[in-house]
Image 1 (cartoon, rainbow, N blue to C red):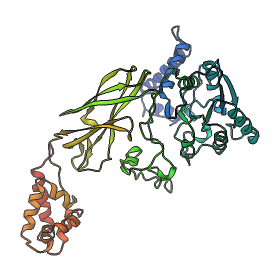
Image 2: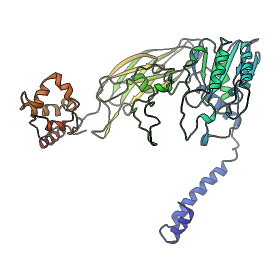
Image 3: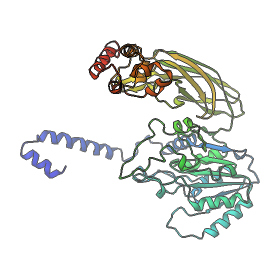
Image 4: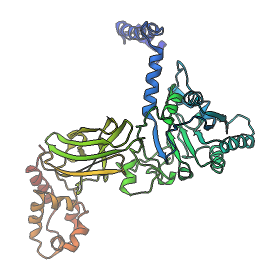
Length: 500
């Protein structure tokens, strides 16, 4: 653990000096690589890298809502009010060890002014980002309201300050700062063309105002060129194609982990199991703000001609994507899979594949998406391996987990082998087992109309017994089966059903 311990170990012979030299050489080699890379290489294109960062950021923005206010076109002679300190002072990266020093930093306000040179662009801070900063909130709000009232379009920049989300601690709520939502309320009282632009690392609750604004642009933390990327999307230089990687709930209480988190005594129980995120919301058909996979475009796409084929290696999905609008754009085709009647607990549907497809205006493109077996398998604890369940698979394509546009069914043979049974397997599992079921029923047949035999001969009672472990049979009044006989039943059932 310390250099003194290393020296002592070499001196007493418990550590070979050559081993220490090897470890030290590795560190020196890494340091030298860092030194060699500290100076930009001759072919380093700083402006080219920044342009790439702007393209990536533009592709990452999610247009959540658009009631006809975007893109901002024909701005000549119009007035655009930009409200919110985040437009001038961007929140572009996370906190803690994720922070880096950018080669340059764009802000949305300057980029908006650049793209709307023929318009009048006003700016009002509206709020302060630094919680320790001093400002007259009333005066800031009044200035923003006056600017919004005089403008044709209003862009309100809201988001989370860095101190609200970072590594090392968890957020306690999903709310935007109260000063920002109060500012938005005041602006909405005087303007009917309001677009909100968000800067945040994790989702925030939008349900308090989403239905009262005309546009919502989820910007996330976009990096050093994010200001230009936001302007590109607002003015239609870039047709947005980002999609939500998580559901935006209506409130914190609706989230899957609400009853389990933060736990107690420093321990959290992850009680959601498989039902995290959209899997939980969709299983409960819960009301949400915006669904997983959602994202709008400045054009429209139609998904058609769906075909699905199954094989012993997976599922192949093909469909046609048609851009029915007048702008080139990108659609993110999402493939969800369900297994109705599955023998194991499953979400109602799960994303198993997607494709980001560029389609020119008025054109169509055929898209192929492959879902390999490993993405369809579940882990069978009885057999200690991953298993592809045989049966009917329902394949659905859409533009989000709630915007489903085509469904097809395919049959898969699944993996060979019969599940193993134990005395802890339930009676229901035994009865459904192709080998264990007949063996169990045969063993109980001698009971006639008494005890467990009587129960399993009565359909109304079978349902009650299905969840009972087989080991309970030996203790059931009138049962003809002993514990030793149960062990023999298990051996007989598994002898004919050893996993492939």
